[in-house]
Image (cartoon, rainbow, N blue to C red; front, side):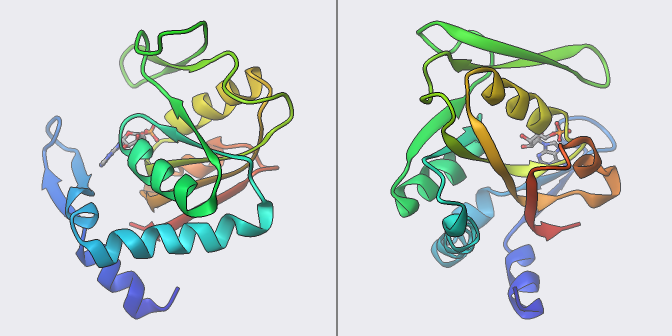
Length: 177
Ligand code: AMP
């Protein structure tokens, strides 16, 4: 991506200091999604990136990963798999828990979300510590997915989240802060 494009795309993201708690600078992507040109550009870049991998499914992490992931699935002509917060999916689920700074959280997916061995690309809006994406990756493996790539619009590189993610999987972020 050209530097001018990177600078432009970054300028469409809004920083919200001290949200949801003091000391966190929240990267608000609603302003990017709200910008038709920026939203389309993000999806076009991700589709071009993942086209050679020929995924059968795009998986997205609740909630902003649903927005990126479903637009990407439509663009690529694949199915979409929602990775959800606990208690939301109606059918039988597999669950993966992960540690937060204080306490733990988990993600769920339907047990029959993909046929065994399906090639899947996982997406979310932002990579911070990597805990959420790692849990989603492990979870998709439990239901038989072959996750070949994990993609983000934004990465907070000072948190080194990508070091937590599997070395044999392609990790991609469009923007780095
Ligand atoms: P992590 O598990 O620490 O990598 O956190 C990633 C998840 O939390 C993603 O689903 C993000 O949407 C969200 N998140 C974490 N930190 C931020 C931040 N500073 N700004 C926006 N979203 C964030």
